[in-house]
Image (cartoon, rainbow, N blue to C red; front, top):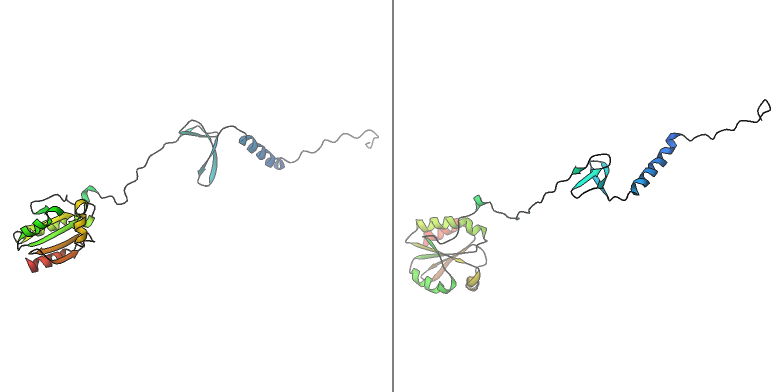
Length: 202
């Protein structure tokens, strides 16, 4: 009763502050969002995580933002040791000064040189130093023409057994012969050593 003897008025329950309801509202929104049957993906930009809804292939949409087209690009892997065309060494095909020999003609080649100095260049097609020094070999063949004969032998294929018997383990290897006898061997593309042996024996 009140001071006048009448019934007291019914007090309405106090509403909780709005701030205390925010966590519940946020939780309800998240649960409702997760209940959506759409497929979800996460797009990360800087420090913000933005939920994305997949639409058609190649397109994604952020809620409240118009769909964006996602472009794709294919990358080709370049070889680890690619050589530019401008840096490629000259082709090792027979020139007028240096000829190719193979195992079946080896003995006849040694006899046919006579008393001239013979230099045999042992190489392979994949050997970088072999290609790099080849132009220098052509210069030597031209400079000492008539005194020096240079031939080359590919260490692969049918020549492999002969190359192994000659002890070739490093490429390029240069073996010098005179009167069918081995007089010197140079392992590696050492221009100075080649020049010195030619000067001493030609």
